[in-house]
Image (cartoon, rainbow, N blue to C red):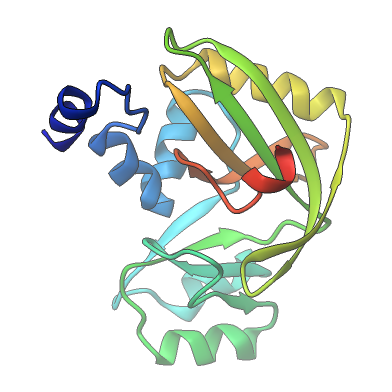
Amino acid sequence: KWRNHLQQRTGCRVVVAEEGMVRMFADKFDTTIWLEQHGLNPPNTWLCNSDSTFEEFSPRLPMVAKPRQGNASKGLYFLRTDADLERFLVLKKIDYCLQEFLEGPEYTCGLLFDSEGNLRDWMSARRELDNGKTMMAEVVDSHDIDAFIQRFASQIHYEGPMNLQLKIGGDGQPKVFEVNPRLSGSTSMRI
């Protein structure tokens, strides 16, 4: 409603993701399900709840525990050892998901879709983080990442800026662990 109201009052076109898409991608577990359904190779991800057991997750170490609705690395736990997992499970965190830990650098990929949903441009950068914020980014050209971005774009209908966070999995393929259908912290660097 507010988008239509603003457009009528100002005559400006407001480009913002649909509410359902924002809600889906705000949830880390729902993001994983969407990526799986579209053949986009997300990291292995499991729900963690009050019934979760040490025996269930110990063979899957190392992992990252993250709030389903988190951002900027808030509430993130790195579970590398059995002791880390035991400490985490004692907290009985609900609304968390556990995700396979991917070694190596993190990449941020800024995508831009036109008003017809076509991918018009993108940029990928290897980045270093501090408390979830990009502190250093180096633009990279990667055939594998570029091919993945094009595959991703073919699976979504979207208008405007979007940001993907990914790492390269043990199989050498990009694995997206976060999708942000909005302007992101690296937008200024991309410009």
